[in-house]
Image (cartoon, helix red, strand yellow):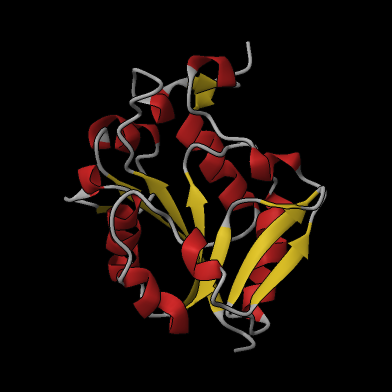
Length: 187
């Protein structure tokens, strides 16, 4: 619905198995990876809620002023982190962008464009660059019951096929770039 408050739900609860360390606390451009992601969210002018899990202490230390929800069942997979964040989202939020903490290269203008599409009434949004969908996806509150039914280590991608998704064209290769292994961090 037009005028909807769109919040950024920043998922920062993963185990970082492939990295072998708490990847969100590793340095990127002089700050922790999670801080770089949060800078983009802030620059987009979005309210934020960060979901912590496996490395909660170091993630919180990297972003001490950001409101946090803890996903106690984070080890069961991404869906549990998403559900913990949705359950803790402020009632005023009519939609969320599900921002992955390990994707610090997404530009603020991309986040803003997605939020604007949700604010204009879209039920779901995804960014598209080079003909490929990327992250983050966004969801109006009316879709949250379906998100709350997810389980395991799957995100919301399976739901997108059943929704009327607005594809937002962006000039941002960051929507395809995450940090999973040491080689993903710039030298």
